[in-house]
Structures are given as C-alpha cells and as structure tokens.
Image 1 (cartoon, helix red, strand yellow):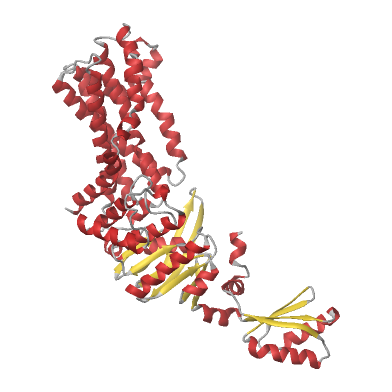
Image 2 (cartoon, helix red, strand yellow):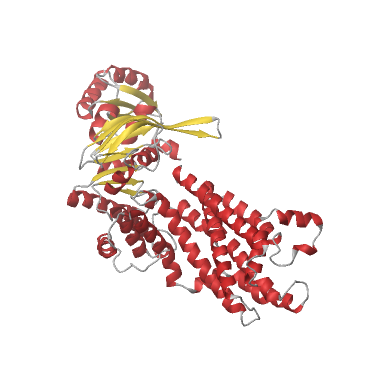
Length: 249
Length: 319
C-alpha cells in the first residue's frame, strides 16, 4: 500500500511538468518528428526499402524515440542527484524503489503518448497500420523503453555527482545503436562487417519485430527475437536498477 | 535526541587509498539543544550529518536518532527528522509549491493536508503567493528559505542543517538565522547544524562542537571553550623597542601566561583573564623601568580556540 502511494507520489511529481506544459512532449520528440517529415518522404519516393515505405519506416522512428526518450531519462535523475532534491527525498520515509519506479512510469506514459502521436501523424502521410499489430508493437516498445530507462537510471546514479560518464556513454552508445539497427536504411544492403555488427545489436531485432507487427505478421520469427531482446533489456535493466538501489543511492 | 557512539566512516578511493572521513565520534544531544558543528572544510562535518540522517551507512559505530537506530530503523528515523542539505532541495523543473506537496506526500500526508501545510510554510518563510513559481526565479536567499520550508513539512522535532547560510549575503544570512531561532523558540525544535562561519557559531549556538580531521576535539559553550582553551590576549607596544626582550621575560613570568610573541614593536601574550593580568603586567613593566606606550586586551574568538587546539586556523584551510 505504502509502496503504491509512494510510486503515485513520485509519478505525480515527475509528470506534473509534462501535464502543465504538454507542448514539451512535442519538443522532446523534435528529432523523431524531423525524421518523420524530412527523411520519411525521401524513403517513400525512392525504392530503397522493402515493402510499403511508411510501414517500414515508422517502426524505426518509434525505436529512435525510445533511444532519445527513456535512454535519456537518467539525465533528469542526474540533475536531481547533482542538485539537492534527490538527497532531500531520500531523507523521507519514501520507498527507495518507488523513487525509481515512479520515474520509470512517467517515461512509460510519455513514450506511449509520443508513440501514439507519431503513428497518428504518419497515417495521413501514407501509413496503413494494422491495429492489433500496432497495439502489440506498442507493448513491445514499452517493455524495451522501461528496460532502457532503468539502464539509464543506473548509469546516472553511477555517474553522479560529476555526470561526465553519463553524457559520454549515452553519446557514444546512442548513435551506433541507432545506425546499426537499420532504423533509417536497411542494413541488408550493407557490407558484411556491418551486417555482423547489426546482428549483435538488440535494437536491430526490436526494429525488425516492430516492422513485422505493423504489417500484421504476428508469427514472423523477428517478432519472437524482438520480444526476447526487449524482455532481456527490461530484465537486465530492472535487475541492475534494483541492485543499485539496494546499495543506496 | 541524538546518541552516537564510535561513529566512523572510511572511504576507499580507487581500491587503494583509504580516507578516514570520520573517526570514532561520540555525541549526545538532548532535546531542545542548538548545536553547531564547527570545523574547516573537509573536517567531517557533513559526513557526520549524513550518517546521522541515514543517508550514509557508517563504516562502524552506532547512532540512535529521535529514538531509533539509524542503521536498522532508517524509515522511523526519517519520519521524525528534517534535513536541509548543502545544496538546494527543490528540483529545477518543478513548481515550488508542488515540491513542498511532494515532500509532504513522501512523509505520508494526505494530499489535502500536504497542500495546506505547503501554503502555511510558504507564508512562514516569507514566500507566500509564490506557490506556482519555479526555483530558478527565486533569489539565493529565497531558495534557502524554500529549503527550510521543505525540511519542515513533517514538523520534525529534530532538524539537521548542513551549512544553512553559506554563500548568502549578510542580510539573507541574518534572515535565515531569524527563521532558525524562531523555530526553536516556537516549537522547541532540536537543531544540529554545521557551519564554518565562526561568528555564527559563536553568536547563535549554545553548544559548539569543534571537529577536525574526523574527530571531535572540543565541545562546550562558546564562552567556556574560549575561556578554557584560548584565554584572553594582551597586546602592549613599548616606547623603546630595545626593551622588548626584557618585557618578554616579564610576560613569561606572569601567572598562567603563554604564547608570548613579538611582532614589530608590539608584544602579545595569552592569559586566562585579561582584566586581572593587564594591570599587573603594566605595573611589572613600570617597575622594571620599561616605558609602555599602549596596552590593550581582546577577547578570544573561536578561531583562537581552533588555533590553540590544532595549531592551525579555520580560515587558513578555507583560503
């Protein structure tokens, strides 16, 4: 009971700025939106991608959003750790786990809202979503997002109070993960070494799974691999997160 | 209110060097006391506070705070204390009123009660009407007062303040202090604070605990510490500097005198009580035919206490 109340308290705290300024949701998704409008049409016109271009491209945009949203979630935690507000909250009886779960929940809601918005905006452009597939795809995305968020929190806690480690790792990790996942262009046409690198990138499998789901192909092997990759990310992230909290923030 | 025995904190840096931040601190604070931890930066003041608030597990030793053990009953301790850290407690992204409500909710208050308490405290610290403001729009003094309000949400009988007035202008410092003192007068709150401002510890605290290199080296009222450890200071200037060696000889012969030093044409020494020693010293000089130009006495400061205890001054280390 106390845990649920504490989680609600932290979620309310974190979500209030978004609630009061919903436009901030759009600003934080500026990059995916730019790709949707300025890069998407290039793909749709060309023949570089297999299958209907938007069906192929929009799942990639959603993954990109995961990498700029939840992966960066630790940044705000880092600000609270560098300032005094995390310390202030820690000297209350509030549940330590709720401090992170409440934050993760906020990332979950924001990610879901942004994903729905992107899909909504892509429909007029030519996306023809398979509804059950899209819903399953969103669920997969959220599982992956929670895992990334948890990993980002752990990184933030380890990086405090300086924070350099956080900025360093996220900058170094984000773009290779993105480029090597075939989010923007198919990796199938790339050289062998690049395909090999992509095959060890968990993001690749999640993108592939999302694409299959958006087309309504529930039984494709990529869906299984993608679900495993997302689940694994979430399990590792939450496990490390819990362990780190147990050590004391 | 606080009973600590053998509190120790050791850090290991890069798996090799160990730093003993706090070494075996014993401390008892009764309800209603105002205690100042005084010491140079890095003396272990904040580390002590962080262990007493349960933020940092002690390497060894025990502490009971507000009736509960800080290592085994952390939640119970936290429910009864307020903590105002060195940094500002309100997050930049949030409205200050919302932060107060969050703080109350974290202490288990129902939302309505937390909201009422937030409004009440904003008025107490002179921030009424600023509920919807973001911290970045407040002045340094206002932010510090907000920190105090955050620390008071749960009406704690015991409040820890880590450098509450550092970095503020004199007017804001005075204002912060008036809030701290009013708290004590109105609610009998027990206060434990750290400072490296000597004048603050001297003027405000009834009990000063001097800490250096992780150890408590003195404990008492400012007046008692000064009388016991530093003594008064006498300074005389002589008409003829050639008489200085003779005067120094006489000074050393005074009962209870020490620390005789000659600086330019002036001679200084420490004595237990200047009011008796000064006339005696002047008479002795006169009898020896040494002509005195000026003679004055000064009360010691807490810095003199620290100097007497450690051979260093608090200011030296800060500079």
